[in-house]
Structures are given as structure tokens and as C-alpha cells.
Image (cartoon, rainbow, N blue to C red):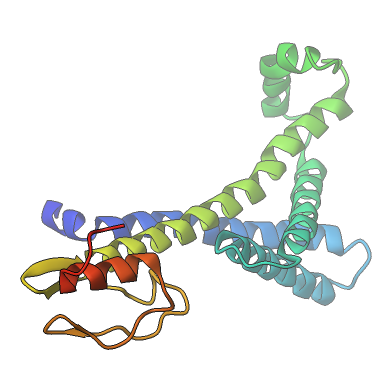
Length: 217
């Protein structure tokens, strides 16, 4: 078991990031449905809620890999809808007459009073509780998705850097597509250069080093 975990540690960690994404996505869809049903039939509300979740996942994925354009505008809009839907559902479900709610008010009353909220104001206390319970869900889900993407991206870069070639008895980093953008194929044979890679400084240094014609820049 320990050996399996060592061999699959990175995949296991990525899987842990995936768990809250899927769970929160299902919960958030049901929450947003309750908000959309105020102005739409139930079937439309379900379709819209699913569309919002997909749009949120797509926008944060695009933002994580630095795709240019209006991706941040889409991300802000769909995340705002998620916040509204989750907070509204939680606010609607809170029963101020339950012992749990009264205990919560007793516990957090001094904290919220410092923000100017009256501890005896039940509506204000419901708002604070709904904000905490519903508002944090989109943040957890989208943050987990961001780390899921970035963690996998880091793994690819590490694997790329470990690829090597041996030229002239020396070990050199292989100029892979993932490292060099717009790279023309570069091959070295017996220290003979066949083609340069768009004047990329690192590739030029590798070629010069392999031919013993120059030092590293």
C-alpha cells in the first residue's frame, strides 16, 4: 500500500482535487435550480443551472491556461450567478426557530456585532449564515479546479525537462515542443546541425555546445 502510494502520489493528489469539484458541482446545480425556478419552469431551471456550472468550469480552465479574450468576463458573470443561487438556497432553508440556529447566533454574535450587525436581528443573522454556507461553495470548487489544472501542467513540464539526448558524449536537454513554442524540428548527428529552431537562444546554445563551436551564452 505504501509503495503504491509512492508510485501514484501525484495522481492521487490530483484525484483529491477532483473530488470537491464533482461534489460541489452537483450541490451547486441543485442550489441554482431553486433560484432559477422563480422565473422559469423547472425543466428550464435545470438546464440553465447545468449550463452555468459548465460555463464556470470552462472559464476557470481557460483562465488557468492563460487563454486570452473575454474569459474573465464570463468567469465573473457565471461565478456571480453561482454565488446568488447558493446563497439564496441556503437563506431560504434556514429555520431561525431551530436550536442549531440559536446556538449559532450565540456563538457568532460578538463577531458579527463588530461589523455593526445586531445580534437580535434574525434576518441579519440568516444573511450572514447563508453567505458563509452558500458563498464559499463556488470558491472551493473553482479553487480546486484551478489547482487540479495547474498541478497536472507542472507534471507535464517536469517530465519534459527530464527528457535528454546525448550528443558528443554530453547529456543535453532535448528541445521538446512543450518547452519551445513554434519550434522547427532540430536534429543533431555527429555534431552536424541540420536546422535551427527559430533562433531560440536555448536551442542555439545546445547546438553550439554540441559542436564545440561556442560557449554557453
